[in-house]
Image (cartoon, rainbow, N blue to C red; front, side, top):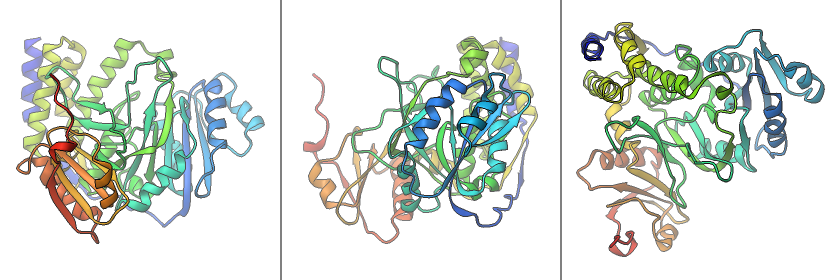
Length: 406
């Protein structure tokens, strides 16, 4: 695979990046939530998913839009009979995830859009917690839920998405386990299966990029491009879903096919989204080196062509290095009940002492020291997020640090 590896490296050096203006945000919409659910032959999943939504006490007016994505299981007729208040958008042939949800987004009328997979079961308080995040975080683009799995199933997602890898051969984006009490921590992106978005900001980004086929990475693309505009995404602990993982995709694709799709779409993301030339070259080099080492020829063979396609993206207004440092798993936010904000460094992320949480409105913990990029990013974002509060800096005391293993 040395030829394909060299070709990918060389093509990456010649990637062309073109900038364009943001699209108009459009007219102000009525405040409320438009829930968009893509579904392909998912009648059985929809029965439970819709019942969970119906049991919610939403904090605002809402609508449900099901995109019946090339189904032949009678979903549309069943919805018309059993769920008359659900609006159905029908695609005659199956579409990619991005194309399907974009049809639903186009039909949405409210100020916020919730993308919800039909295999996500929303627990009590789901919509309220997501909605409240927009009241607390300035310029918020996306509030994303905490993802749990059925009992006995390995937890593959959590909702706390970061760009980090423990080993060079690991996929570079992962979900970390949240710490008890952690909430509204900045994350890289929101899961496209259980997140609430500002519809105007979503429109300005052109909704979901349809270059990603048939699924995966389009939500990373959205989160990254929003951060480039200074629009954050946060993890919301109180918005909980249970995920019946890959309940639809596994019926149509093998695990190997899904792995190939993930790798190729990640390469597309790098080419289409990364603005900084130095950052692109680093991440691109790491990606093609990893594909070569781990023996993934389909992705490696596609890499050069993907790089040479070039990209178009919005003018970047917010440092990629800044938000990448903030969302690499080194920063956690803990709401408190006091006044002002504490920014504290620590050797490992752990729940702050209870008496500290009573003293401060929020505690922002940063793993590392004050010389690190994550600390500087957290300091700047804390001042932006809580402009009226003073920010106190400190180090987590020894008594509050986790015990060392012997």
